[in-house]
Image 1 (cartoon, rainbow, N blue to C red):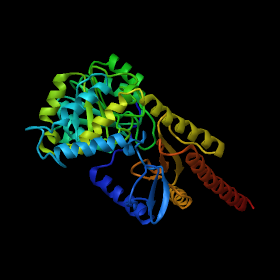
Image 2 (image 1 turned 120 degrees about the vertical axis):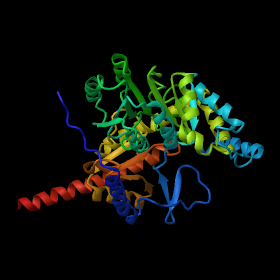
Image 3 (image 1 turned 90 degrees about the horizontal axis):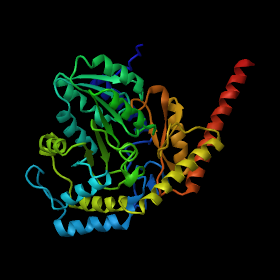
Image 4 (image 1 turned 90 degrees about the vertical axis):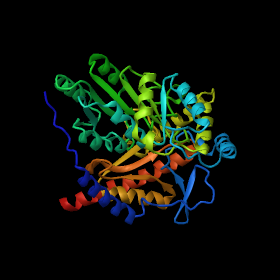
Length: 420
């Protein structure tokens, strides 16, 4: 049985769509803002002279204001200066080895390569991993930073094909169909999808890998690191562990409040190959001493007995949001448990009106419209962090509920007028 394949826009079409979205959202004050605070506490930001509770931060564990991370960053600067300006091909700053060893412990003593950002990690790893005789299948909603590497692979003649979102059944069908034509088949997906907060079924993905020896999985778990899994190893490694044919990238600049990205691989040989040959690792600058110092301090917290309590705080806020949402009569679309909650409005105008009304009430959220989400699935993205209080969450949901009830009332009135 075949399934319809989702349309995938060309690069020029995508740029045009992004420009159109930016024009709309910038004109309504939803994006390209700059916080006006002299100091940040993690809970609030000031925009347009108004102090807003911040539901737009990905710092899920709230570690960016932790005094241990700040002290470690300052100490690193005092010892090593504000920058270490050398490609790691020649020499790495002194703290790099300690940082990589600490992150390796976080993920269960697996080999890791630390890249400067998650985007640069994908650009380093994927062209090294995927060979000329391989094929690439990718989830329609895998992060844009992963999809940005596809043109590079396609220029090398590699078959790249988009699959419907989170359809592992469709993945298996395509693996079977392509297995006779390609040496290996790579599946690119997210651990936690960044817009709507849903998760890949990591147990089912492991089972697929077991059934199909030609299949490899490349998982971007930038939004899963820190707040979930043993030692904060994320929604895949922290729950299922790694598979022998799996590569996972963990973003360290979100819940971990550090910088960079850990490319976690099943063998030391593969780690060395990515480190030696990954273009952005060879030709781009490194993480700087302050970032390395903060990263080491963050990793120590992840490895400590303190982490389960921090993770429970995040879980408490997720459960509170969902309970309040039900009470207020709306749903937060996110199958599975993640700190990203997505309130789907449907149309873009209604979404912008909701976000604007929430700002007026004192809450900052993220607006998601096409092409970030399908055109009919526009909504507001809400990130839950330890900085927010349960009262903050209750009052936010109350405001969303009030807006939803007003819209329902207007629709009912319009329908009654038509009937009359």
